[in-house]
Amino acid sequence: MGSRFSNYFLMKNEDVIDYAKERLDFFAPGSELECDEIGDGNLNYVFKVRDKKSGKSVIIKQAGETARISDEFKLSTNRNRIESEVLVLQNKLAPGLVPAVYQYDDVMSCCVMEDLSNYKILRAVLSEDHRIFPYFAEHITSFMANTLLLTSDVVMNHKDKKDAAVNFINPELCEITEDLVYTEPFNDCFGRNDVFTSNQEWVAAEIYGDDQLRLEAAKLKFQFMTNAQALLHGDLHTGSVFVTEKETKVIDPEFAFYGPMGYDVGNVIANLMFAWANGNAVIKDEKKRSEYIAWLEQTIIDVVDLFRSKFSAVWDDSVQDVMAKEKGFKEYYLQNIITDTAAVTGLELIRRIVGLAGVKDITSIVSEHDRMTAERVLLTAAKTFIKNRYSFVKGQDFLDTLLQVQQD
Ligand code: SR1
Ligand code: MG
Image (cartoon, rainbow, N blue to C red; front, side):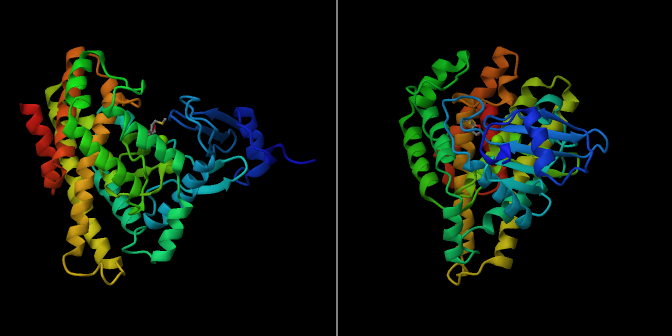
């Protein structure tokens, strides 16, 4: 008799237990397995399977044929293959900074991976507990410098790189980004934007009504779609990062594809800024607030500056192309990434406040006045990040923009 896992279907908890018994050699014979669906992302189903006897556990992540948040998004389950292969590759390029993948099933579109239950999602611990993670900037910049530069044309054999770009072509997930980041937040006609009531008139005038901003967003959209620079994570916000006090693991690279490196770096910076706005609005104790905000501000600076220095070091160690070694080219290439980083910082700030996919850091601010103000500060800074993107060089430039708007 054939296995019922020879044809794809969306599994429930009981199916996942049967699947683990039939398909995994992770658990010992006679294990007593239990399963919970613990996913809280927008797209997939995440099952934790645990043996009550030994306490051993794994994660089984399965992709459905539509997005978990809405059937409106029809998505190929191929994203689970992309995620699995990218995690395996990233573990080689940035060892220890992603969960280990144990196996991938092409039929059931599910991936079996290391259980990180002792870790917490960074966005949650920032916005709920306002905790400090002193190693985060170090870890995330090692992750980005290595995974981005080492998958690019300046390091890889050019034919291998083109094969990789084909292997990781990800049209449906890219379309989500093209729509939700680069199109809908600048237009009031798609019916999916979700603007806080007190800011509706402000957004109509300052975002939809700003022709110069819309033109820059248009330029950036087509740059995102055509600049196959490196294998991106593609959705590197604080909800895609697991942390303990001393460790960091980047998860969920299902949006991975060959795109502009600044897309990942800008996502990290913007999401630190959401945490910054949340801390300023919500923490009542002055000492706690100033310590937390000081750490976030230093982390914003460090992410840019450490990325620059690590990128430069990896470049010196790994770049192969003879023309890429031309004097001045590294500095030119890196400055383009920082320019893109500034632009994407602005785009991510705008899309999370105006567009469909909001962030808890902002939506959990209870006071109407404080949320309205936080959103306006971030949106005003975002416009500068996009319009003046060519003027950003160092981490301090990013922070100064935010602080300047906060002061005004
Ligand atoms: C329909 S998916 C909405 C958002 O969730 C993902 O995490 C991506 O950020 C996407 O834009
Ligand atoms: Mg995700």
